[in-house]
Image (tube, rainbow, N blue to C red; front, side, top):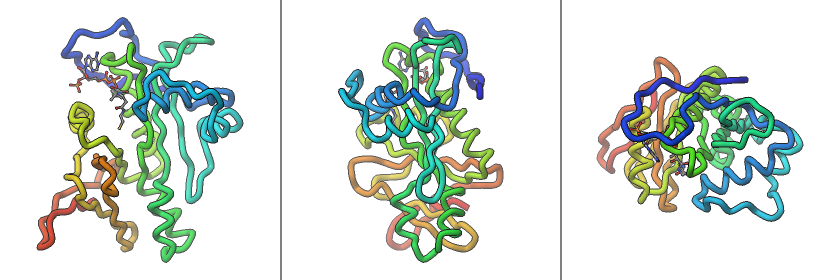
Length: 230
Ligand SMILES: CC(C)(COP(=O)(O)OP(=O)(O)OC[C@H]1O[C@@H](n2cnc3c(N)ncnc32)[C@H](O)[C@@H]1OP(=O)(O)O)[C@@H](O)C(=O)NCCC(=O)NCCS
């Protein structure tokens, strides 16, 4: 699958990569590539683990579409071109928020699957340092959102380090609403309410509605505010 880069006018000097990247679902054997890019997303730029972890092993075996509890994850890899051996530029990995959905056991397996279809987490997004500022991250985000949207997803969220204001701004410019630290987000799926927050671990949620009729609004309640997706 190939996605084109979303159009956008550059406002700063760009690095050498000017052509839209080629974005594809990771292939079997891409485990080490995905693992290295995951380290970039996690803030350890350039650190490649000596032995690939479970995530890399799963990608090596199955490619980027991973069967998870309640639904599927999807790893997209951006490269400068489709030429074999072209170095990877970036990664986007989306998945159902498994631990959150586990907490809603009362929904039953079908209800949990419905929730997993409606709510997704952008768990990893990273562009290698030399490729940044050329639109690769924007293109990866657009491709990941398009995949989720076409699968019926209504709401996607990312967890951004609270201190990382440039990245929070980056998401805001791409339609994400940053929640305040600790601010809950609610989503109604067929009359069942799901409530989640950043977990107080130094991150903030950035949320974006994906369905055309989905809206997020900040609700002022007696105990504080929350973001309601409806
Ligand atoms: C956040 C990240 C994915 C963005 O990817 P990117 O490919 O640099 O993003 P884009 O090129 O699409 O957009 C870059 C923005 O920065 C500006 N920019 C220009 N030159 C830049 C440069 N050298 N480096 C970074 N940004 C630059 C662009 O003008 C654009 O601004 P805009 O938001 O006003 O459009 C990337 O910086 C990254 O991997 N960061 C480290 C990991 C991380 O923080 N991931 C997010 C975890 S939630």
